[in-house]
Image (cartoon, rainbow, N blue to C red; front, side, top):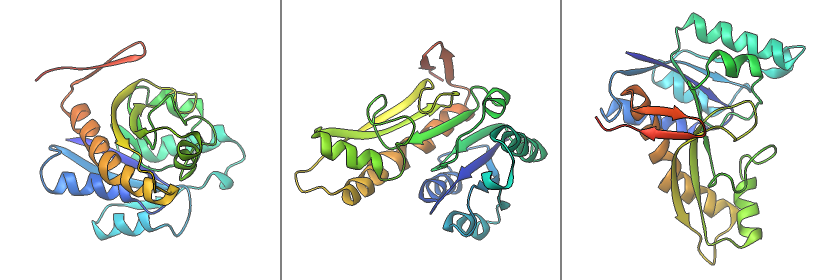
Length: 209
């Protein structure tokens, strides 16, 4: 059984997509053993509780440094024997100590086709706003392994979403979630759990069963 720890900061729609795929059998031999939010009162915590998943807020502001915050997260995930960390809309920066502790065992979903509209400051609705401002015809979502630099780790999966002439940042955000994020994040977890992801430098190779 693969123990998954999920990091969240908001409504938890990607968390819900993972829960649904585990419950319907698409993702096998995996269990979400803990959900950690960077903020109190977010709906993602309620989603976890509805499915009897232990959920807690560990806020960056409660620690004197990013390093101490990373150590707190490490202690928490180690107490649950977490094998894979999934960032599902987590907005706090992870310190090098945490990233190194779970090297190639942290995956993140980003609402754009990396390397476009990514990096520090590109979160939430901002990548969608920037995509529309730039006038690109295609955007999408990316699942990648997490490295110390924001949105710079090896790419696991990407899926494109075409932009419509009448799109707003909000309609585009919703469609990218529905058509891309909710599909490729569970798929990446499934591939990881099956031992099919092999990291070679910047490339992630998906091995056949």
